[in-house]
Length: 153
Picture 1 (spheres, rainbow, N blue to C red):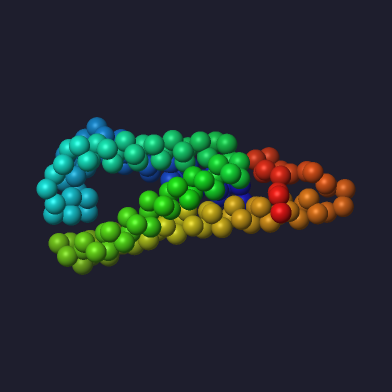
Picture 2: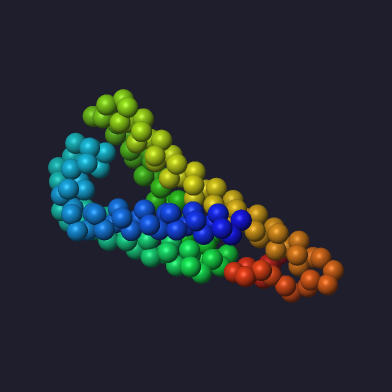
């Protein structure tokens, strides 16, 4: 289970690193993507700010990938979901200028950007339940696995 968490967190971190770098260093080219500009006027400042914020999320996700502690992992995933869910709904309201195949592909990708971290978050809850069971087992009092914080009920 830790392997799936680490792989998923690493994938999210890498994706944010690539997207954030693209928006910071090549903002006009990033904005020119049909699914980014969405028919709006270009704003260099907002593109660079978006990229910088995305790079910040890459740092948090990257730290969670390396550290793998319960608190850090869950915080990173909730942080990502706090962005991904509204992002999905904003794009859902702005599909009119896209072709049907492009709009469908965009919404599938944005849906997966919610499903992946939500699934990983569910795995962290499973890990926590496993840690509780280990703590409750005779002779195992106080033991937790690497990266698991002691459970407080």
